[in-house]
Length: 504
Image (tube, rainbow, N blue to C red; front, side, top):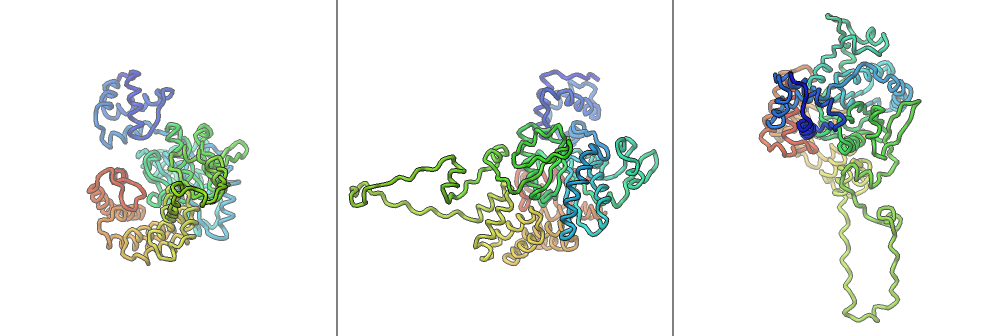
């Protein structure tokens, strides 16, 4: 096999993978790109790498082709308790604080391993928590692990590892949390395996935070060795999405080499003996520059005072004093008073705040308005979503039930209730609410999709496949670019791709 690609073709291939997957390979990383292309060519049966390059550039690629490329271009180096200094900081500071504050009230933790590769990272988190929390069975712990590499996800879900995955881990890891099987491999024990849920998610393309993919209200997000795959512009968008996915005062952990990508000044940088974490500062005001970087529409507030005017526009207009009385001004020069401005719609203001990730402000706006007293179901449902994204599940349930009471026949509100119940770990109630949504709307795509997810995790593959098939067929009836109802922006085409990936 010829293993060199012309500079012209490698440049085109770099643009291609950016378009297809959001992956960024600048000229300095063309060597990595070429190695991935060579291994992809070998899998697809091409003997000539230059011919393969031309084929990639000129041929419409199938989903399978794209997945093969992703598998070879995103192969991650990982092992248990990688960067042990980070896990030490988590144990001594982050988790100890969270466990202490949650122990007396709501025993709940939510963690997201974004770019989990073959699963060593999320399983390491699960092992650490199992050692730190004696009454683990009394806690509602969510560890969501996502990746774009389907092969890595498959291996992660199997939980089988070789000696190489333990190369920097202490011996007690294997002894206490793994069972030795044939061929010298080790299988993770069921209690730890059950703590982690693996999902396909593309950080460059998919919507988050979202109740749909369980990426909301996170206490801690791992996103190590992932941002390096993105351009600076796309990385800023990803970081903004991760910021919005965190609870107030939640933590973001990235690799030291990727720290420069965390450009949002919304994060507070916290150093622990050489290990750096980023904390979402709920009290730190969001600047115009933050919003511009993330390319989020700027919300223009209703200016109530000189101080506010100065803060947003940089100056305060001086008052103009008119000495003449109205009687002294010729009639033709007296202008009719302008009509009073229509006060802003509190619901639309709240919608804009929500879309910008300003969930606390959206909640305050809605609870402070008269909309709830009037039983406005749209406002109540939005309030439920905003509370859920802040981890306020009891409030989310309350407002969602009020929305249903105001509009009993709306299937979307029953679906919203199901997603909140699922986050609470109330599985039977979740299934009932989803079936209620389907009773009201038999074509409700996402209700079938969530039911498929539940049944898959319950170990009922046939039932799961049935629900996924229904979801896929209904999604296919929509235009690929059409956003699905209650999906928070997910298109029909994207959902179809996710379903195909999950049922393989």
